[in-house]
Image (cartoon, rainbow, N blue to C red):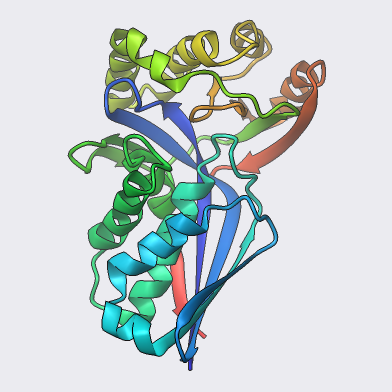
Length: 284
């Protein structure tokens, strides 16, 4: 019997990749632990407090790394504990699929490279339709931390760096989980291309604002919120992923001001630090 545990952090969007296949994201401190225990037998048991997590995604990641032969004679128990709500655009599925790939690699294929581990999660996300582009930007931001700017279709990191500013992410999680029609984002692909080019030049906050104005108009019922957050001192603000969560990046001494902007809306607000640390996996 063997046990491995991976710890990975989540991320928020700087530039949404759906319109152009190119995106950017930033790691935040909300974390997810995934533990895998192997024993004799067969079958995959998944223990999660939150049942809405896609077991299809987890099973697909495992199939990509663990051979059929191994699976036929090994029972796998996976338990998950997460500080990240699922289905709000806060990258929980990218984080979980990557962490599952990490524990599988640790126990079954210790020579797998970072790229292969990320690929297993990204391809499983596409095949189970959890993500349209595979969300390579999100997976990399969760795995490496800091800023990443990527070309998702070619699975390439174009630019990455640590976020050294003294800032926090103030995240609003609306009560309603309604999401807009994400396919409509393609109609504004020029704007997203522009935002991505800003991110590529490390102009992240302006990239995030441009992305925020475009996504909030298309996806959310609160398009006025982005200008309001900026007026109140946010450096950058945007719908995260396809929403409905909204993230604002703010200097640490300005957090309460941003929280009060969100307090007029129905939902809850949480504050996260920036994460610059790479995900870790250990055999226990």
